[in-house]
Length: 116
Length: 110
Image 1 (cartoon, one colour):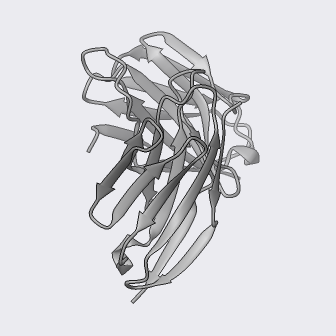
Image 2 (cartoon, rainbow over the protein chains, first blue to last red):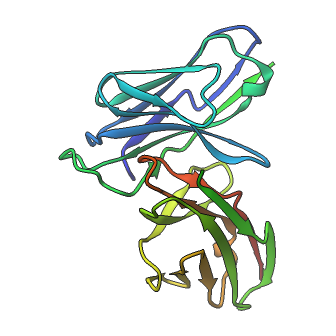
């Protein structure tokens, strides 16, 4: 157990509405990530963070924004949800609690988002 | 751009029938090749990290090996509880994130 909690775990929302997914970690890891997983595409990186208020784009960042105001929380926001954003979203963490570049990335249990 | 290709996409085995899963990769400066197991409705579970060609790691019925272009996940005498999707990923010089392959769905019949 890497101490990662994602919320909500399941959500159905309407097209055009804003949605925020939350990732909370309890072990002070430096790096946090948001991936999405879709059939035929595998896991793809959306955004990641390398520290408080330090974030960068991944492979599929269009339509998503992130924020990290505290070490333990990494938020993923869909400003105006579209049907193409129906997916499973995984938060992940890495980096030793002491701030070093811990190499293994651990994943949360996922958030299932359906945009209708 | 880092790329990872896994084969086969799906593999059906009888209990006890050993086999191997393949992960071919291209990466700019390998900083780790990772294997994960994913059960339906769950997040990926970390299995192994390999760093250099010739390296091997084992865990129960699983053994991962690495060459300069590919990695194999060998499954010896599998059991039905080994049924899952196995994911391969690489980390290169570009940053701290992983690039994943599409996965191999393993089904072990009793």
